[in-house]
Length: 432
Image 1 (cartoon, one colour):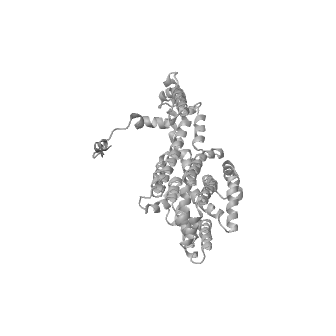
Image 2: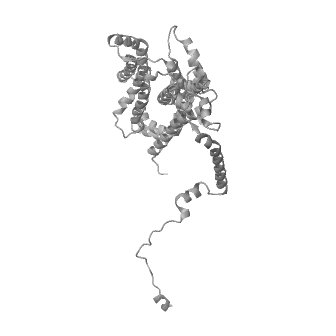
């Protein structure tokens, strides 16, 4: 026994084994394929079937897309250029792209909607990306009035007068807040309405007579294509979020009157199809206005679309509020914060973070629903595609127009969804 122990040597390695590459099946593309496409017999079968479907689609559509005509003045010229073979006639896009984008907006004034579109990204940048200078938010607040003046034109004092209404609301809120918080909210609503109804018109007329400044006026019936979809969609998205927040808070309020009004509004709007509200905006709203009142159709549609989206947004945000643990509310009370400070600093940021997927889903649905305005006579891209196909030069063309329109809608909606994923990753605080 002692002889065996004397020959036993305990060995401890004093150098590390050199690193080696992992097996080829456990790294790179092969590992990804095994984990995601061929992880089991069912996934393998589904992957092979999917590849067959993709191959069949490419074999059927690929030659049609590859054999494309971009320069032609009519469908007949396209067919002559194709020489009897199957192919796409995207020359209709090359010939009518300006109508699909701007409708009947005067061509010499295209720079105005293009400039408004570029400034839109400048206005959104400090809202979407927090690392930019906060001073840009002043431009974001002024952008709606700048965009209105660029798109419609007319007297510059009209958008300035509209902006002064919000200034009146802020001033009224700041003054009355020292007396009573609830009264300050009503003052912040009543002051702008009073200004817009009784003082904005005389202000515009007076300033226009003293200093006539402005751009050439463009009627709303000249708007069309993606221009009108962007105007309605962006405005509805921008306004429905704050209105939805107020409706969600109102629905959870302890004040019976405020809660009842919010509940009735939300349930009524959610129970009525959007197309019904659009017909109401187009046909019935004028019956409730004073005789001789001219209320722009696009503005009426924007109001109805915004109210419709705000009702759905309120329920999405209410879900976020309900998902917060009770301890967050108690923590706000323990810090001595009043209702609005608690909502602004503690409750609402967390509720909005939870609600990001639902909010973005509502935004995307709203943007796509702008195509419904075709039923009330506004020529959105779908309406203009019908008008283009009614022309004898392009009568009989279908897929090329719809592919182009669908691609543009996809770009906008996909961009919104990707930003929401970026925002979720940025606000992610856990490490799961």
